[in-house]
Length: 105
Image 1: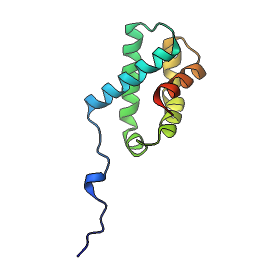
Image 2: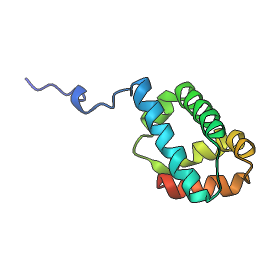
Image 3: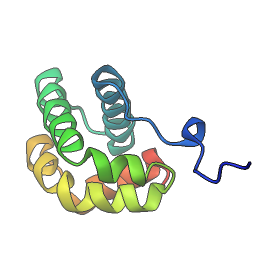
């Protein structure tokens, strides 16, 4: 008898809170490098907290779209970019472009 259920082994698991924090930190660090502007440690910390909170609130979408970098970059443009741009004193479009270049979307 053959079992036709999708394999649990290949199902995407939810990441841990630590994994989410580390991934968000790396993504923002790479974005800041591409902006070529100095971001103070306080600004970086505030942006990381904001980004992690938004990721946690939208975790089901992010896990489902895990392999679709374009969809995740679009999500960042709509949900995170407008909040981080004024915090870092950069234009929203410039921030979104830097994130796409850093993230690969």
